[in-house]
Image (cartoon, rainbow, N blue to C red; front, side):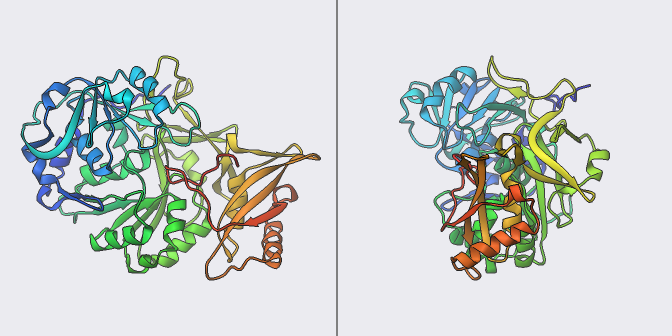
Length: 464
């Protein structure tokens, strides 16, 4: 039997934000502007708000703050919001506009893209227009884009209810939380943190893609950030920042990539008073669970003991999730179904069970075939990253006339512990041999100054 998503019967985002209370003390903050939520109590930032009622709109803004305000304004007012990330290529826009039936573009700067300039544009400006949101009760679809695609991006349909299913209700006596995230809030991981701050009664400090980690962490510390999230790649970059010593959050969250033991141990050492947790979520499956025991992977018991309405299982080696937090469908006439016949989403993440624990070892579509033997890059990286001289690694394949492919690795050394040399390369390879079978040990290591990270904050594996 499939799990049905929540019906459209909950209050709109602004109503839930207002109900969470303490508006006078809550804010959205980016690297330029502080936006106090209380100003939206009786004013709108949309000069043409009424013309949008019931429309399907593309929310395409230059700043994350404008997107956050746009979501507060639009949920319950329009029938569909397509939350557009800054890296969507212009060549994909015609199909997006057609499939999503876009009638208007919501923006914070004038549109110059020819495809979008032909559509009506409604600007997000200063909150000066008197308004009442009492009638904002339409069932709004939230459309997010999948990350990491090299072709036409998939549009994933959520509701506010599916997006907030993992967020606890605020308690009356709880101190307001100040959240922050390295993510862009227009992607699933960042949107989760924005919604946690809004419906959970807190505030949020937004990052900026052009802002150096030193500046961002210093700003987060100054704003009193207590809870912060990012991918393991975000956090590895942050650990090199001198400002991290002055930052003292109480909760540190990792998601978006498998969190290996090395990065978890590093963050526990830097933030000894903080709870360090890593969560599993995907744009399609929603938030499935989080792990707070300090170990990589998750306990096997989660496979046998459903957490509330969320069920997880391993089928044919991959993690499957059935949950009311999942997306309802992909948008588009020719789109594939999101779930199987039983309502489970196949995440395509390969799981290996060892000593009562499940570990993420890679993606089904990322396997390297070494003479008929499978190698998952993430599994090898988790071992390399445990070497004391290694900061980060990327494992990939290289053609071999004998076995078809061999495993090689690009390695970024820790600033304090590593110095490029043949002896260090040999030591890292010897370290790998103690924990990996022969076909998974890299045939060669190349020391590099850094590794590319995608717009979603994940280690870039294109061409790997």
